[in-house]
Length: 299
Image 1 (spheres, rainbow, N blue to C red):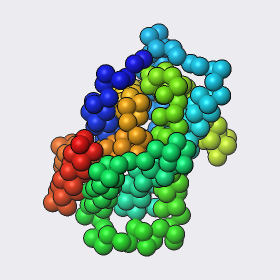
Image 2 (tube, rainbow, N blue to C red):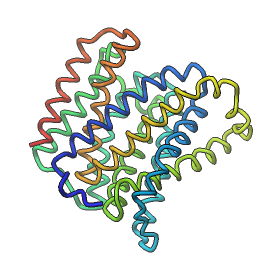
Image 3 (cartoon, rainbow, N blue to C red):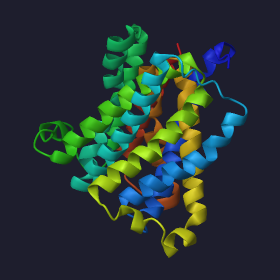
């Protein structure tokens, strides 16, 4: 799959990924009243696999003989699965107001990891754009809950949930870098299929190790009642992952991850629209800074 003609469109795919990510969070918020965090995480990955798997009919570039590709697939799948588990555990142990700011550091981790693994670094304007996106995302994540900007980091080493959020951010950043390596050795859609197959298996093992009766809570009458929203969640997650992989195939992982943070901007408007959330002033300030960061990255 030749992506060269679409290189200049990377930011559109990254923004699409951000939109689908924000949309799936809105659906997740609705479904979280009916399912446990672990069950919902597993459902969304299984539904995403159902949606993604048919892509092998058109795209099936799987260079299994290449050890670098196998390493990228394994590392990308395991790290994204561990990141999802760490994030869920962080949200379970501490306040969202502490987890959100820490997760905005993902692009910073991506810069360091990408430089270490591939030697690639953003240019000066790119670094400025990433910094603005991180700063804007941080302001968005604080919202009205935390008026003192430094407290999430002051409490970082005191709250177990914040440490887990840091682990999640690092895992997602590393997964994006390995994803970019794997995509360069195959193509975005084939790599999406591989990761979609690994994630549910890994999550099943993790959740079963934590709770041996996990499988008994998966098939319930509530699943049948909520089947359509669950499938919608899987579709949104699959579209987010596909847009993610295409963006990673077109630009640096740090750029793609930074623009994906604009999901916070979409969440502001989706939260206002569907859940009538207020306190828009600080959120709009963060959104404006993020949009200026996107403009810097497109230069």
